[in-house]
Length: 263
Length: 248
Image (cartoon, rainbow over the protein chains, first blue to last red):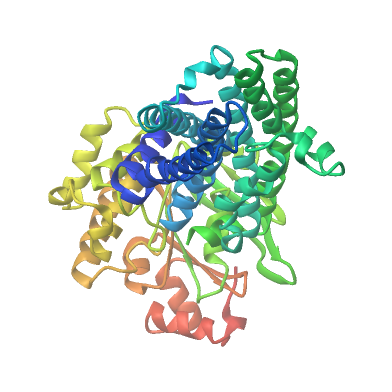
């Protein structure tokens, strides 16, 4: 791993983001819209008196944490698409850039953007809804890391699919997280799901994170085991995503797809 | 080392289509080597295989005596590439793009190198401009600045003067010659511009339908194919005529 090259690629992402208002909207505007919609829904539910204890904290906490996963995933795929759209992809891969250096740079960008999103949304939630994310305590760091890891492997998998199937698959950069959202227990517990779907939720790392978050809020307890399971699943999926990405990347080289997308 | 680039029995199939059929050639250090041929001849596919972007179906490529598949990064650190059809990120400033690629190629004193190349290609005044606002000719010169950032030992150029007017193309050819002579750079150049090829290239190969059909100096090829100019030879070969006159 050559860190000078990783730093150069990070600089490229930073310059692109700083010049593009719509890219800044991905970090600030859309997450804020999410927070406002779910926040107002929660306020409405509270006024109707039709709520469970701590519901406001569940929903707002869920929106904030979901955005950590979503932004980490999205930034990885969009970073690759940026190079395709600007016809710069060949300059990158005709240079001495290792695929792992390129991925490392996108992962670090994902970490930075997810950190900005959680800080920004937490501050906004405190102002608008008097919600304090620090009620999650020290486990917040473990929840964040697990969601970040899941965003990373989902982003890598999405990029692999885009590398292999090209422009028709571009929409997946935004859509893939919504495939796992229903079984991630983001806004409701796994027990709400039909019995046949619950085993699926059990192999999705994010379901343990959101269940864990609800447990902390409701019972003030933290189940370290479930987060270990989440971490273990993330490691397994990360290895699988890396293998799929490598396979698709080599397929793209064999079929001349990198050159095709890059010109 | 005599031959710095060695291409042996290179073949590339895309499904039922064969883009490159059993091509072999070698290029010496400091030589400017022209790959000539009509559209779809397999020139760009060959360049892409030499950059590790496309995996060959058969054959092998050695650069600096090392196999490209095994030592891609080590080889590409000492090479560079420019194409009229590949761009730098459009919303970055000229100097930002060059700085990023200087870092990617591990250039020592990148700022001095960037200043030198911008001055040489006469685009210093564009340093703070957004790349997407440059004209096609300015972007071509920017691409060439990027290609010389790391003082490459091997430079692969895919139609480098395609979007330049005759005056600029002439200036660029002179700069390419100057830089090539200063550092004895090996250049592999694909072009449709016969003046480019005649003025720049020490040796030329003609590629047609994925096959290497003739090799030699410009005047040798004209004599062999009975053309008054290289352009006539090109047209003859592109239309499939007098191929019996070709000897590899």
